[in-house]
Image (tube, rainbow, N blue to C red; front, side, top):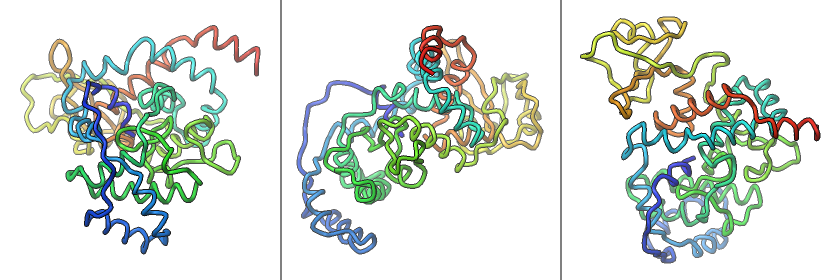
Length: 335
């Protein structure tokens, strides 16, 4: 679920690709493991991997994620734009029945679902052009910092290809191997994706009922609490606050402990409610937020506080403004 970040890091790179070497010990070990553990056909696995290409651009992009190199105001300016908000409202109207149905079943607000696909893929318009096989194989065998994770995702992709009858040589996605409008990694696709249109298959590229229900289900399984706040703007009533671990994803504080340390936020929430304090770089200096449990749930989708904050602000903007008249008219004309 990281394609949105790739859009922030586009620069001209020399095009370089080399076919994965099946003779490498780690590749041979991987083949042996998945054949035994998952009862996959050795010849099929070997044939699939023999078509995988190493992509240097993938390693370069993975080594420089956007959240680590951009201030909040720079990151925000990319995702919270007039166009993305307008298109989010149009998307809301176009898919209102499906969004509201998912919200009734799960308690996840429709605008949160809209914002996820808005941040991830501009409402399904940009789902990634890398072959998923190339992305996962490159990161599994040529990116040591997270090789173990991506080998697991490569294994899940092989299983998904078998189960869903995908052609593993044709499926495309992000530089990190995420797929479809909601940018699910293979493990998430297998564990959390839902057949929203009840046609017997799950299509996260073309079926909006599947996409919408899958995003909502992902949040529910990760603990979304209906009706609870996500994040609040905050201020400090004295400037030199100590013992505030700003920026952690984990809910290391509570609403009460933050209030006791001088953090001001106008949300009627119990003192014992878990919370996280966020200090961010804005154009005019630091800006502060307090995230609650549902904020943490959004970080299960992408482990970044700035990502969760962008989703939250985009959702708020979509829900706050007037719905586009042209979209409403189209919906009225074609119920």
